[in-house]
Amino acid sequence: MGILRLPVMVEDGSWVLANIFIDEGSDSTLMRSAFAKALRLRGPPQFLTVDGAVGVITRYRSKRIQFRVQAADEKFLSLEGSTMKKVASPTPVTDWHKEKAQWSHLASLPLGETGGGVDILVGLDHAHLIAVIQSRVGAEKEPIASKTAFGWIVRGFVEGRIGCISPENKRALEIVQEKTKRLEVGYEVPIIWREGEPNLDSNRQMAENRFRSQLSRFRRQPEFEKDYRAAVEKYLDQGYASHVPDPASARYFLAHHGVYKGKKLRVVYDAAAAFKGKCLNDAIISGPALQPSLAAVITRFREGEIAWASDIEAMFNRFRLSSEDLRCILEDAGVPENVIQAVKERMYIDDYLGSASSVAEVVEEAVAVKNALSSSDLNLQGWISNSSDFLRAVSRTEPATDPASSHPLTGEGTERVLGIVWDPKADLLGFKVDKMLDSAFSRADLVIKVASVFDQLGTASPFIVKAKIRLRVLGLKGLGWTDLIAGDDEIWWRNWFLSLEQLNTLKMPRCLFPDRVKISMVELHAFGDASEEA
Image (cartoon, rainbow, N blue to C red; front, side, top):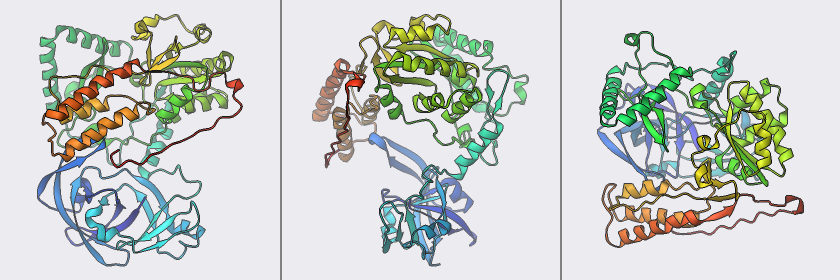
């Protein structure tokens, strides 16, 4: 990461340190809104337009500001930029003053500690300030240093510290490790508040407005009300929620609404609902992502001939755990290290799936994991597999369940495993794409529809990328976010959506290595082709 820590001038002439991120991939300079407020900087209001992934355009309320930075050589640099709530993710903290001694090409440079939350992002609108004046390059895989108008910037990592995390995420892990408690049944985990939180204004007025809207929908849709009340009663009956003794004393309310998933209604809690510019999520540290990547979990699911999947019943209503917490639970239960490693690699949030060469190889592991989690009130349920022997072995350790109630897609012979459509009987993977042809399309409609095609492993990329290229062309033509497409563009998109439905006929074997005992050597061949469009 190209990041420095330099003084920035406050409105009264004093100076405060800021983490400044040099980003040659951005065409704009941005300052974190809270930091600009702390500097007491003023500027005209504006709407900031950000062009994101797959053509998604978002508009933010912003201010145009001017500020001064003191470079490492003590020269003053004048910059101009826009405010934004968050300009970049936190970066790992590294004290280059201590670390530089490891490399002769860095040892003499005036370097200090860098990293943490990013306050300012400097883009190409100040290209003259971020241009490289001088470079220091070492051996292969060693950090490099670049001198700019701001000072020396080091890019690279310190050996053995690839997993280093930001101070905020470090604090989040410390809170979880310190305050997580083992109860008689299950675990109690803390809310990971930011420094100085909770400091939330009473949002009762907003909550009452949302509640009135909910009651209005109940009157229009009696069946929706019936399902909603049943869902809330279930939370109360199973102890996931309780009545507030004195609602008049409550200051902050968490709004909620109902969403159908198939025929089942789920109550969704809206922690992102802002009141006076602040929401509950703003006061909580999200923490680092500790679960394995989704692609890695799905790939392991495809390795062996025997595959299985299961999920934890109502996990998010009991408490929230990271994959690291699940590892601790297994250690508490005295589970062997190989089983703990399997969970770390095969569990994604509340889904547990994998594959192996034989039933005997996996039954012991699956039962051990199930029993360990069950002892902490986390019950794996709804087992599916391409092996009836595996299902029989697992079912001996749990009460009989109705497969149709656990898996709504069973009637079609397919299941969704982390978004992937799987036919366990035929052991084939495929797609399930809904019809998307409408009477008219806006640019926003097209972005949503293209993004809705779940293709985590990139199987359909040659087809999907054509739509993403076409979306960019619409933007280059100046088509507005809500403008309807017409003419040749409309014809192209209608043909593309008709072709998209053919993905429903695409089937491919789940198992990558059938008859593994007969395989003597495996080679991975990668092919890349540069494109001016993609």
